[in-house]
Image (cartoon, rainbow, N blue to C red; front, side, top):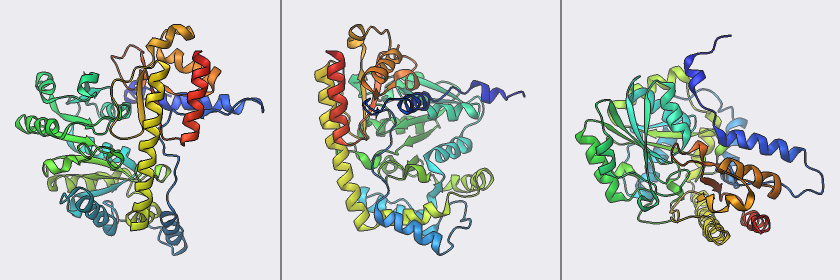
Length: 394
């Protein structure tokens, strides 16, 4: 069977490849072998809170399982609109909100609606790999701009202006970012958006970790910059609903009809049960739980990142959100007899039973020096991981 050129050129998502290998290794382990500690996938260890689970059960029991409008349940769109007003002080009308089958579907819809084959979109390096892969599937091209620790691994307006070319159609940013957990300074983001507007482009911002910001300066939505910003968001991270596959997209009024048509044709609507369940995310009791969990994620990072530094990893920038550590492991390569982060991750997995992710997914320019750890696991697991790494490196 002949595969399409599109299918052939899409790279694997190595985060999941490493996960498969680690799960296979864990399944083969002897009973006395320490259990595998999975610090490789960005998935909260918390699940949906009780009110959300109960809402899903009610929806099933009452037969609320048929198709919704392609843009989603109107009460859910209104609840998200109210959340923006209450949490961020930003007016985001419900009519501009489209409920999607996860943030991945939201980004696909945005790219399909905005970009054509041959268009160029500017992105930072490092960044989440699936964002550029989605661009590739529609024939657009992601141009990755190298960022440094001094920039908090985020691009600035001057860098974007220098890279802007005749085929550039816009920018795709993430704040807070995966894999670095760093956000774009609000003043810099304002300058970036002004540049994009002046060049006739579009600003798309992945904000799926926005609810997990830990610094008030950075914990602001890009939607405050104007109605022409496109924002991708999700119920997976802050709202702890990863497998429910539910997200949303905020677009200008002029994009709504196109997004609706695309949704109708690509997947009809997001999961109806997940949408009814998500209504309970915004109940006061649920929000209180989410805020407790946000504080727990912050505490985990504040323990784990200094511990990695003590072990010899390079982490010049403290994340201000999400739950990741983007760590330079190259100072430790000689001690483990490896040459790059892929080999380093392999040794960690086999000898310390700790799973991380090599830099290959996230950066074209890293040269295999960095690894990404997820700090979404419970504190006890992070403490055990540090103890194992200490023994291995000793």
